[in-house]
Image (cartoon, rainbow, N blue to C red; front, side, top):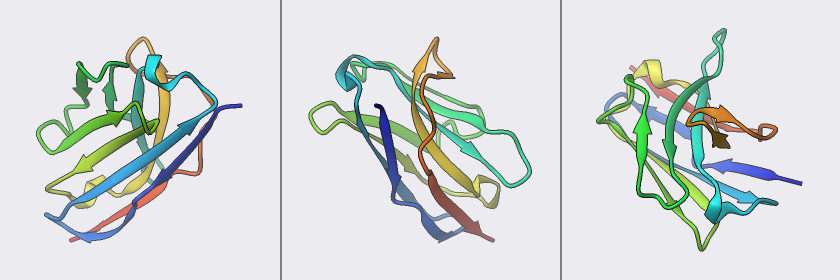
Amino acid sequence: QVQLVESGGGLVQAGGSLRLSCAASGLTFSCTDMGWFRQAPGKEREFVAGISWTGGRTYYADSVKGRFTISRNNIRNTVYLQMNSLKPEDTAVYYCNAVSGGQSPMYSWGRGAQVTVSS
């Protein structure tokens, strides 16, 4: 059974930074592309960033490009999202998941990590 546990969320002022972590188990993590998604209140969940299983390729939604960085540690089965220059519109619950075809989530969602950016 695949488990995804996000952590590192919190309240930050606009312009600040946060680093999210996602610990994955129950899958062959080192052979799996991973992604981060977010869901703001009243909105659909959207793709934020993805990383190939080697870590050699990363890709981002236009809204976060240049501000967010996705990375991974295949020894620790963990994927990270470094978020800089945060904006109030980045406020959302952030989720990680394995992805196929670049952006399609593969498993059930974890609880997510709440990120709140105040203006």
